[in-house]
Image (tube, rainbow, N blue to C red; front, top):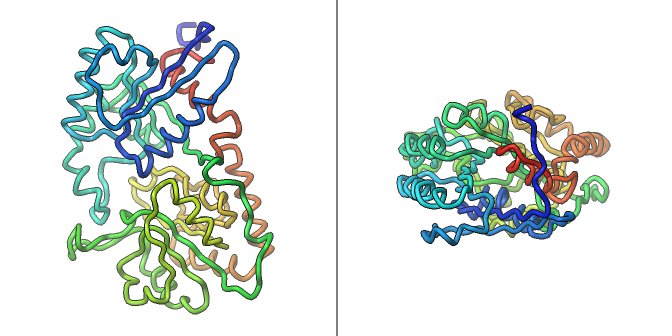
Length: 366
């Protein structure tokens, strides 16, 4: 009986505060977007309000209206000292939990990923932050498993997309023009590829295998290849034959992807622990864009229809999809059904689940 969730006493007011460390990625996806929606959440005898900041507030009394205070993606000694200040001063006056929010694997990052230079040096500090906080929220069960030694109270909130930013789905196969080349899109950040100017010429690698890179090179005249955000340096010599859209502000990124109107979207990932800890957000983006997806056979995409363990399997799936619009429609509809409940923040009571996750870590619920 001791572990049963207790309904919060009503009328109730819930205040969420997050110090956001990443406003161009997971901080926006996992904090700013849902906070917009929580401020509009309506339930009898319950009022919710949210705030997010990038700078810490030292005034203890300022925290009085908040139920939860969260530190998103904190990873420095200065962050750790701020969290210690919060626990020693704010918690001494107000019983507000201190929560750590993280969407990424911050340990054992591949050398070709430029983030490894920063986070490999910060590993012990990150572990101390996790151990100091009262609870943690991650985006995947695999991340929870990896971080379990450093915090005993970890909950999972999956990623969702905001429909008020992305708009509705318009499956590409519904308005296909047979005169156009098939558009194949990869979208993401530069940390999927080795950047020689940052990690050095001697460091090679990335999430695109040599076979897939060679396939792109051979098919630049057959397919309409698009990269949004970044592209592998290995393709620099043919970049005049590839469509490249530079990185966008996180709020503009959905429009940039949808404006391309891709038929196929791909998400290759190396089979390493770092990638097994990732979320399935690329499958959500593909469905939201109305495109069918091909994914590496790693944990985030284990429930999707077309998964590839090798470059040859990736190529097989791409070519079969490109040659058969009915097959594209079939796979797209299957994948939509698999992510439908997770796709939008606004659907499937996902905002209520978000709120209940925070309450549940401290034995309460709506």
